Image (cartoon, rainbow, N blue to C red; front, side):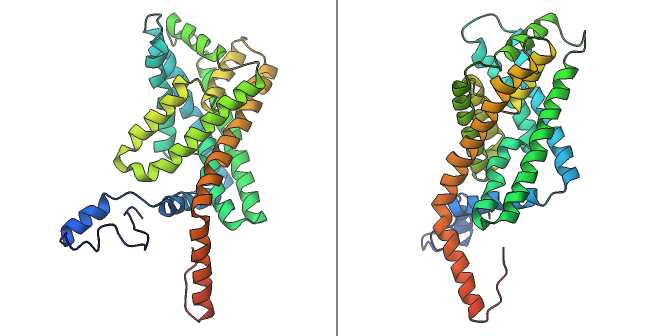
Length: 302
């Protein structure tokens, strides 16, 4: 599925009279993936996720939460060694990408990715069984992502591990994670969910540039100070554990608006729209397979 296809499903360049067989193969390898191909790559990934056991989802979700804590820590480490200036945030924000790189490329279960991967099977099947499977995955992964971030934040409290400058930077970043304005946080979270889901959509086409893709998109999330339910939870949890914010502020000033915004951004602005662009092709394929079955042909269901 990594080969570019034309509208007839043939590899790009495969019929060119100006290329020999080897050159046609090279052209196909360098062609972009069709939207339907990208959709099916991600949908199949979502199918695999929905079939994972509760235990596997629990461990993978917890691992992802721990990994995302490194976004918080690395950003603080960089910030601590930079002079106070207008550009310090632009440099320190590169640290924010570290947790995403670990979790995404390490294939750990991250909630915001599942707003696209798990939703595509639901949009394709549209049945209650798949809806329940999505709900199960979301509930387990979200809870364990958050548990992982709280565990990571607690580790940062151990005295003497980091310098005073780093501890100060951790406190500054943590205070910025919790906001009083519900609507503003929701919008920031919507943009974050939108970008992360788009990142997942882009990755099948990124090939060897997967690392750079994750780095650049999550860097935009960082410099814009958008709200991400998992990365931001490590920061907000640290604020609660250090007494800077209350648990109630964590719930109302971070968790609720960020969770809603990430879901809207990932599901409505990416999953629904991108599924809509290929829905007709999918239905045509279903109808075609149904016609071949009616004629007595053997068709493998995917």
